[in-house]
Length: 300
Image (cartoon, rainbow, N blue to C red; front, side, top):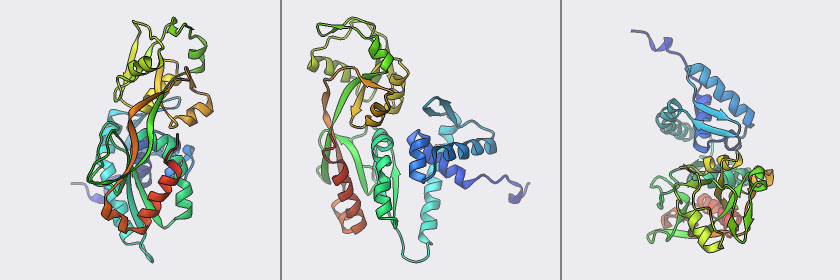
């Protein structure tokens, strides 16, 4: 039997970087969380793939998707990496840092929250914030989280909640897609393939009813289960997509997608900040809650 010393050593830094990149499906977002450049994230991931002899991500332009091997590795490794971080933190010399677990839905995290989180961490470097993402469709506060930012029709009655802003969606597409679009008397006459986000499958019909814009009767439909994938598909000109605002503002500013119509759909869902009342005994958690409310409440 080979000794443990003969087993290949896998880079723990690479594994941690891989887990963060997998959570956000973005090297840019991972770099902001880890305080390194996106190219450094890419370099570490490539090094890990070489060590394992396995491809962990499919890379196409801006798209970053886990391979089957990558998904399996993430499911097994992520809890272990978090546990290692917890153990190491408990032995930190000097004043013990405060660790806060924050659950944020994926697209809100990668496109809206994480890019601004450095403002808080710069002011409070002693506070360790663990940002986790989970199923976008679940209207619940994860049991392991101290705070969560999630979509609800009605927030849970047994917990404290603060309304941030309603979920608003707007039709978008690539600049070329809009250039080829033809609308006459509120009726779309050109080809208009739709990208449907499976969490909100009725968004297009609801928008059509409220805006009065008539969609083509027969059109090709692409269904995707991730909002990041929806936006990237629209960017590539695959079709028109209903995208949340202001969460997608960075994409609009870059010009990779544009609004196809001015009319927005205001859904019956809203982003809420959720927490248990007894958590408010922690001063650091209160500071993070107040910062979130100051920066994201009424962000519309």
